Amino acid sequence: MNSLPANPAPKIAPEHAARCIFLPYADTDAWAAAAGGAIGAALQLALASHGRALLLVSGGSTPAPVLGVLARLPLPWPKISIGLVDERVTEDSAGRNDVLTRRTLLDQGAQAAIFHPLLTDATLDAEVAARAASAWLDAIGIPPSAVILGMGDDTHTASLFPGSHDLAAALTTARPYVAIDATGCAVAGAYPQRVSLTPAGLAPARKRVLLLRGQDKLAAFERALALGDAHQAPVCVACDTPGATLEVYWAP
Image (tube, rainbow, N blue to C red; front, side, top):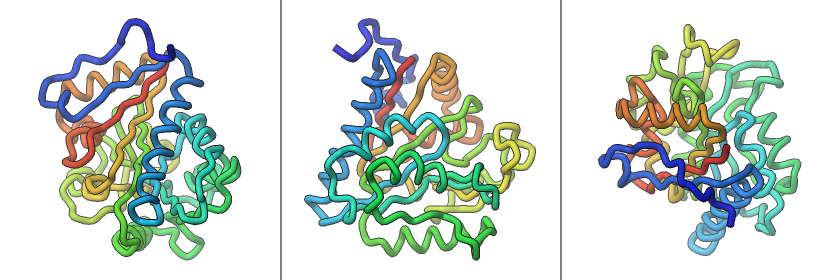
């Protein structure tokens, strides 16, 4: 039995509870296996319906075990497109989510997938990259089969940071990707210029997954839902944006 014997589910207000399924696991291995398997099943469903699939991946260290499980599944990777939920606009490869995704997903067994990074050498400009990403997502012709989200201790998700200059516009735009200036947001660190998926880009996704590890992240998620305001706690968009029910996978 992989689930925790005592459910540590966060206190979720009724208006959020209908939009969110909390799935706790006792350890990282069980958590990664469950989340990776569920995402793989969503890709298989899209392949059966459309003949191809689209996965949007978040950066950071949290998704790595899940992506490793996913990469080892016997999926027809040449029929699967992989894009990013967000990106840090920098020439520094150590800070880029595309570099991390290659290492944690593509290089682990998904090399044959069609990878679409948000930046190229010609688009080291957040606004240019956001417009190109929006055009790509609009043109691909199928909704995202699955979107993998994470959350920071400040309750940001994707590159939607509380207090960022562009947050209000990002929450209401019809564009699937926007440029974000997170100057002054401590969690953005040395990379304040970002490209981020928006609620409009998330809404069509057939599966919506939030990956959390640790008691601090669980407490932050609980605080976010208690606030219930994406302007103060942007991760609220993960469960409140109309569309698929959010699946929250958590392990200690």
